[in-house]
Length: 97
Image (cartoon, rainbow, N blue to C red; front, side, top):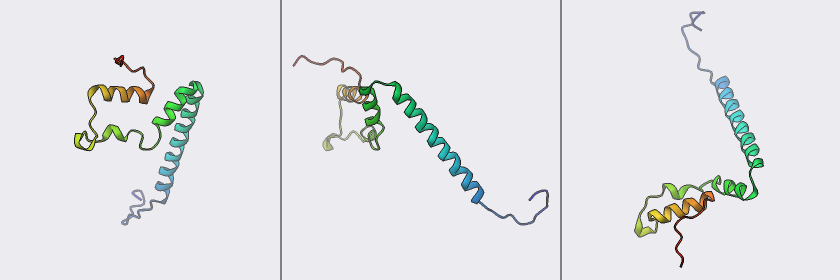
């Protein structure tokens, strides 16, 4: 349009939208391929942890406001224990009772 010295700009986004959607689709396919490859290398218990952690809404508890009257308050130890359970880490400082 610049080389033709056109006075009017036609905003045709069909090609741009197609390109953006193709790039997004390719990116999702690449991520799924990488995730499948990594999952095959893990043992079954780790695969289950990854599946649970990647479900929609699985990390919503991390962004909740810590309002004690609504039961959303976690102490430092409870938060550490919840993270350990989520990621399959050993729980530290477990009391004997």
